[in-house]
Length: 115
Image (cartoon, rainbow, N blue to C red; front, top):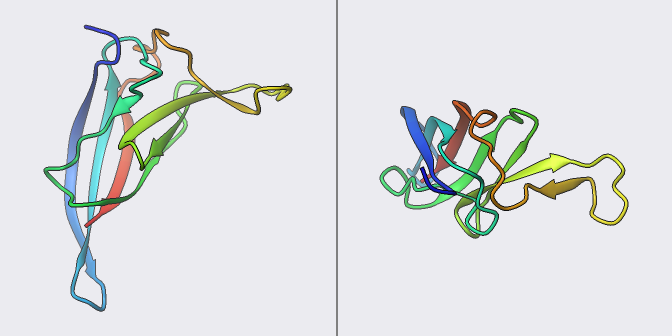
């Protein structure tokens, strides 16, 4: 597969309790699988539009030596690795473009919350 190809598998879809306005928080549980090299420009796209009007937050456990953060502004996951010398580039550095992460990013669980 091409660089930046990833799949998402939705495992569960639930409605949470209603807020005082009657709106219900939706909860989606799924997994992320890398099928190609990392694309530092695109990150890992997250399309949950079938489930949410808006995504409030997404939680992903660190996995395979990477920290995976959700970039809400761009609706994508971004992968970081730790650089403990933290000299000029900080403690977390985005994974460089075109790095093969297929073996490391397999069935990585995530939970998304939104409306």
